[in-house]
Length: 261
Image 1 (cartoon, rainbow, N blue to C red):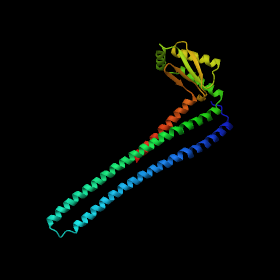
Image 2 (tube, one colour):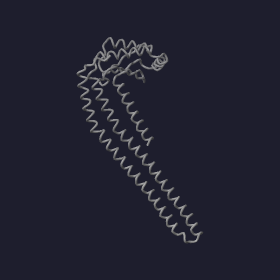
Image 3 (cartoon, rainbow, N blue to C red):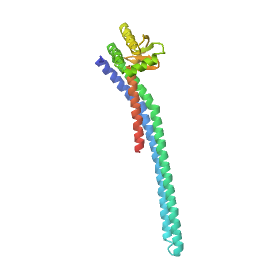
Image 4 (spheres, one colour):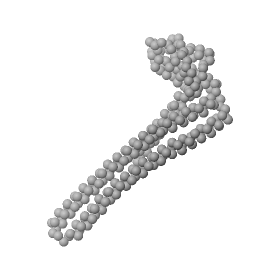
């Protein structure tokens, strides 16, 4: 379990909220305003198309009215004129409707595309900033004991690995140098290094040499690379997964809204 300093957590949370408000006013509000402007342009274009359809209908009504006023002409001429008027009117309405449908579909597609581009351009930056800030908060309240617990859990997970995965690791490492590249936010103790080496040696059934790198941005936990395979239980990796899920959920939400429209 994590040992958390409540006063530090409260202070870091206040800092996070202040930074989140800054992000809201500097990024979210301009983004929302830009989307509203795009929506207004599309609404104006759709209104213009609807006005054109109304004008076509008005012209049809005027044309039919003129035909009704020409009833004094010969029945054959009136009948021919009415048929011609009906055909032309139907064609005008059909063409206007087709143009309106095409324009509406084009505007919706363009609006959806532009909105997704805006989201992709800005949301990635916002997510990165939030993840970095969150990482700083978590790092400030994470203790060495928390890191040690994650390292212990990592080694326990190796022994709980399904036999088919163990077989895969042994096959992959059979023709490779038995070297494990370990990345950790703080240096491992001698006991941790020995236990980790023994654990990985048991995994691939060969003595394993450790190559340790320090990366404070991992916050807690470790990454171990064996050949082309990476085992990662670091806090940074968990935060990256949260960011990826948030991005997918947002894109899915926008896509769903576009389909509803």
